[in-house]
Figure (tube, helix red, strand yellow):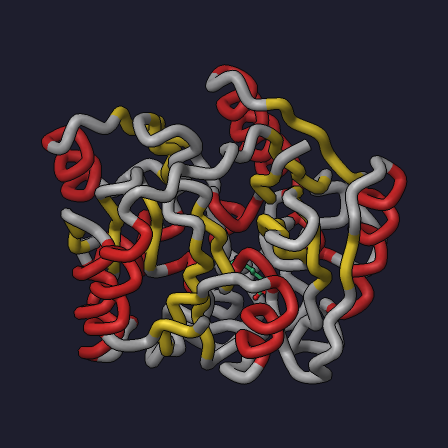
Length: 302
Ligand code: ARG
């Protein structure tokens, strides 16, 4: 079922009120930044004002990545990492190569492989296929031949039992029909209309069953209304802080703690006011490639 207007969101939620939450995710998959750099430009953040590729400080990137890893561990998450691969600098953004979801046919969490939009990133996917298969987790391939960038655009919410599915810059609208038909996934399908917020995870973050952070400028009017009908409370992400500090790419693993890039002072205050606990980290070297906390990990059930 595809839900893409505010009225169908309301009736869907009414029907599901008594359905219990699914088991939550518990594991984090990262990829080591051994070969991380900005080697091409596939989003607006990867070049400077003169159009040159941004320069990454590898030592700093490694320290920041280790810091993020430690934060996940401190929050009680199980963390594993895939080794980096030469000539695949963006493999560190492990939100993109796969999509973890609840398969209602098998009653298990499984993995769907992405089709990356760019030829530069396409070879990353096979490393994740092997990694999950070696751990006995079922991996599916798409029949659809167009673009689908995994958990960057498709976010499965165990609390709601739905997929929030963004499309436009990186993922095709059509792919969600297959997800819905093949795995019986209810999809809240959302058009992304700004090139600055090119993945759903740059402009939308689920904080709890009731609360989400949303960048209004990234969505259509109907998309916003739909989100307002799914969540009791929406935090409007301050535009400038999201562009500068990627706070829309924050990550809340447990309905309480929110890991985010440091610097988003207004957004942090909004979080605290609603009872969340912000954990500010530094991902500035990775922001040069257009990604921060949410993109640097895959959250799944191990
Ligand atoms: N350079 C990467 C790309 O453009 C960054 C990916 C960020 N990932 C994300 N889930 N937003 O593909």
